Image 1 (tube, rainbow, N blue to C red):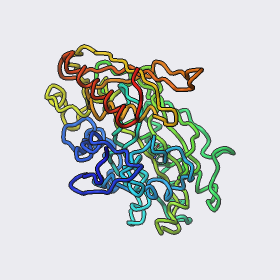
Image 2: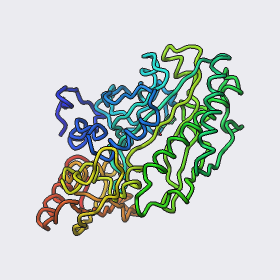
Image 3: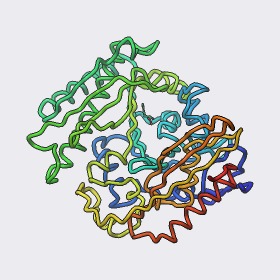
Image 4: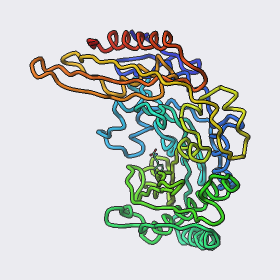
Length: 420
Ligand code: PHE
C-alpha cells in the first residue's frame, strides 16, 4: 500500500517498515499557523514574545528531525514511550516529525544564543476529540548565565527586580521549593546558583502569565481574571529527562486549573553536547492551542485550521477577543466493529490516523465503546464510535456513508481486520 518514497515540502524521502506519516499530516506541514497574521496562535505567540523583548525570536525551523535529536540528545532513555511508533510520526527509521520544540535546544545553544524563544509546529499521534489534534504549536524559551560570581550576581539582581514588579500585581502564587529530595540539584551545580536560576525561571514565567491572562484579557466581558480577581498560579514539581529540578505550572482560569507548561534547570548534558561551557540556565516549553482555546473561547481545536471566513475574519493581530460560534451543524455517529487478526495488533492511534486521513477535519471525535476477547477463539473484538461533524456546513448522509465505507475498506486492507 505504501509507495517507496513520500514527498514533504517538495523533498522526497524513502519509506520503510516503520513509516506511519499520513497524507493528512503531510498536508499540515507547510501551513505554519503561528506565522499567519491575525491568527489567534500568532497573536498569542507575539504576546509571549513581547514579554521577552531582548531574546532572539526564532520560528522557521523544519519539523523534520532525527530521532537522535528529538530524544537521545535530550537524555531520553532508550525505552522512553514517546519513541514508540504508536506515539510519534516517523518518515522512516532515521527521520521523524519533532514531538516538541525542545528538539532544537542543543542546536540553538550551539549557535551561541544565550536567551531565546522558538515557536514551531509539533506532531504527536493521539486520540481524536475537541482538544486533541495531531499537530499543535509550542513555544520554547531559554536563558543561560555565566556560572561564576558575576553570573550569580546578575541572576540575583534580576530576581530582586522581578520580585519588586510582581509585588505590585494582583497575583496569588502557590509555590514549591526550588529544590527537594525528589527534584534534585544536578551533580556539578552549585545548589545556591541552581536555586537562584529556578527562582529566576519562576519569576520570569509568573510575569509572562500575568501578561497573558491578566492584562491581555482585561475588557473581555466574561473574563473572570481582571482588576478585582487575582490571577492564581500554581507551581508543581515535575520530571523531564533534560531538566533538573523540573516544574509544571497551572493557572486557575474560568473555574478550572489549566496546565500551561513544563520547565526546569537545563541539564548539563544538553549544554555539554552543544559545546557550551561554564553556563547554567533554565528552559520552558508551552503549548499554544489550549491556552488560546480558553482565552478566545474557541470550543474545538479543529477551528484553528479552518479556512472559513466566518472564523478567520473574527480575529485581529494583537487583540484577544471572544470567538462567536457561527453555528453548530448536526452530528452523525457511525459505529464500526471488527475482529483483529489473531497475531496482529491495532493501536487506538492507528485507528484514529485512518479516520483522520480519510475524513480530515470532518471527524469531531472517536471513542472506543467496546472491546472484548472471544473466550473460545481468543480473538479480540473492537467497536469504535465515530462522530462526524463539519464546522462549516451540514453533512449529507450519503457523504458520511461514503467516508465510513472508505474507513472500513482501509481497515481491511491495511490491518487485515474482519468487520462484523
Ligand atoms: N518539551 C517539554 C514538553 O513538550 C516541555 C519542556 C520544555 C520541559 C523545556 C522542560 C524544559 O512537554
